[in-house]
Image (cartoon, rainbow over the protein chains, first blue to last red):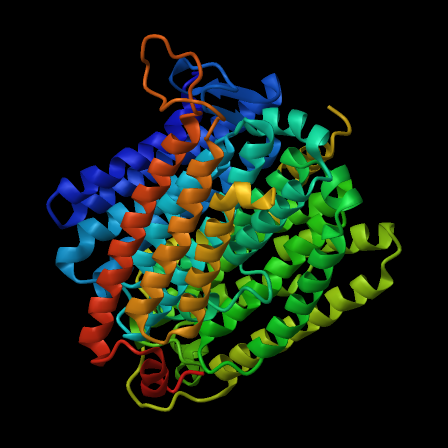
Length: 490
Length: 117
């Protein structure tokens, strides 16, 4: 039982090379799906163990921390691991039909191997309690993401993957510089150990430089405005299953890394008390929320529209964490989980559209409300959740964010959140209007997407409502995680 | 000058800026990768310089030596070098595919062909 913490990373990691060795056809897909489902079980077991035993610590290779690499699991990363495993367990069954349509047959084993590497990398980032280990897993997940993005049929997939490769590597290298400077000041890489030793050197110029590199590097990867330039094209031209996977979990994991470094490693007192990070992040988050939502309004491609919406939603998460209060952090963690479910569902629905129509141009959505009722109903339900209609997860996290802003008397922030939500009503409505109220241009009838795609999509859509109505699990875990990160309560 | 004693770090900063500048200013995708490599090399040198202990020997166990340089940053950067090689390989592979798809590796040409920004 004590090895669960490492198994949740190792299982997908080992599946990757096996996928390459397996002959094409169903086998690589079946193995990858099985691995994803196993990690979901492990994530649930681990969450149960955190509840009964508190913070879990695992010494890799039996080398005691802080010398060895420690895997450390508390509520915050337990929640992220649950999100990762959930999304992967839904997207992988979906990817079978979707990838057969969009990716050449001889590339299938490699596709699943890269998907597993991406998943293992993100899992590793959340599992580890070692600063350098984060960099290693970050690069594992990034390299596989570049390869996956380049698999898109459109040639622009290649240029977008290249642009992300350059910007992503700069971000990861900045992160590496930051970690190096922290090591130079303290002589340790273990996060808990760093947290103990850093107050002694806080305020030195090296530390300030280290924090600057860390924050800019992480923000590049999580696509905080104005460091988001790589994101829209990358999401637009990637294969459907890849977009759903990357959009739902990649940026969320980086938000988690930002929270982990600002709160656990550096400590809220230092990063928000002594350094003006709260102001910087808050301003950028608000500008990102408003401008990205506005830009989303008149995008010609539905996937690109949702990509801009993702940038805005990252703004909500960063806004929550920049408030440096238990409520704000709760909102940030909640929105991380909830937005993963929302964007996963929306991109899976668009994947169904792409499967039948062969494009996600807004113009091509005409009349699909009648031709593909289940797909478009899923899209509308996901859209409602994105807007934040009550009974959906989007409402829960926005509610907490508004509460957190009001708690500190930030009326302007509440107004910004409302304006951004109104803009999201506008861009979702635009798609709904075209799909339901404009007649199909051609006479040939588009058929409904196959069940193999619809069922996973609807599972995520229903999860949006389930966690919107029964918030005990998510809110409970997020509240305890926030309290632990701020050092109040158990 | 005291600061000149830490000339390694000046080299690091210089290389880092050169790398970043090349990446930003050059439109040729291959040159961008060259810039990325220079940038990453700067970080490698930074890590290696960090591990130096004054009067320390090369960290290989030898009789009669008690003071060694810190080998940990070297080991860390070995990992980062491997990552750098992988990134370069992937980047170059993408450039080959871009050349096949567009017939050019210049960023301005690519944008013009796609009517994209």
